[in-house]
Image 1 (cartoon, one colour):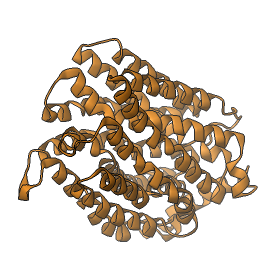
Image 2 (cartoon, one colour; image 1 turned 60 degrees about the vertical axis):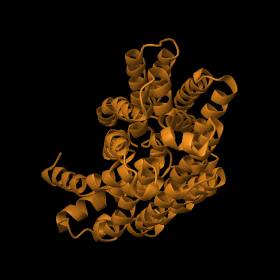
Image 3 (cartoon, rainbow, N blue to C red; image 1 turned 180 degrees about the vertical axis):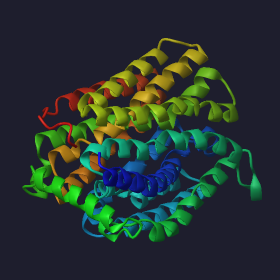
Image 4 (tube, one colour; image 1 turned 180 degrees about the horizontal axis):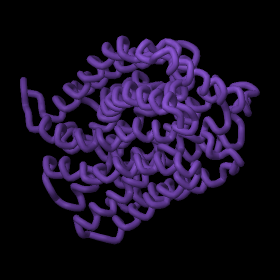
Length: 424
């Protein structure tokens, strides 16, 4: 690698990834802090498991509305302005969720939070394609998405602390939701001044560095424009449909696992809400380095499908162990293995769409996959809650998650191998 290439890649990574990483920590924390609040909220508001699961998942019905338009706006308009708008609106809605009293208010708050946050994740994935070459993309996505486990590692002790405060007569779970919405508003303002839309606008790169990365990305687009026969036709390509179904399954297990983990740990251990909140961070401590390893390995080997499917099969195995043990620590180890697999699939997965398409079509397909795939984020939590109420145990819900993981892995492997599979 030439000195200019190494210098430019390093400078872009240092400038963008840490900031996007922080934004995704805020995003994911506002999305799943409900799992901790639910330890007390369901009891205070008398919500059943089905009501809690439906409210947790209805976020994604609002979320799907702006996914495709949001991705296209990042490609054709401005990532900086679009991401800032998202942060400001979701921070406000997230904070107001702490004021709910009825299940109808709960459903509306979660639905509107999904609408407010829609477009952030696929927008960032598209944004990364403006700055990172195909051979560097899985690693960049892995570093960005490692914010998911970090948000849980940080969120658990923070949430545990916030749930102990009772200011102005409000319970701790309310302050947890209110205060964790504030950082999104602050960083929404910062985003307008910090992010740069494209390399050609980057004053923090030298002329030589700007020319190098711009030339590299232009070359990739010119030789990788396969499948750019139109946005609408792109949605119906066989491999795009398979990836969408795989992402649906992956999100079913991801959010079913994340939003119900504290309650399942509480059932298994009998510990207090404070103790369970801290304990629930442990699976994500191992998940963070595993995600980075999967992104590095996928880029190094130039292989994507097994780096996505393998972790899903590992997640199914981990969840399977939780069904055959009553030991708290073996269960925690199994949940840790499941978490590593659930999130370890993501870096290689999000390198796959750009193997199929480029430009506006690729941006739209990323939004399409995230849009319809995220319906799984509604189905997973709701299915666990519904099945738990019907059966009286979490066993049936966990079996649903295991099936989702196995089916998602198979769908990824059905994507046709390509001679240049490594390039995305």
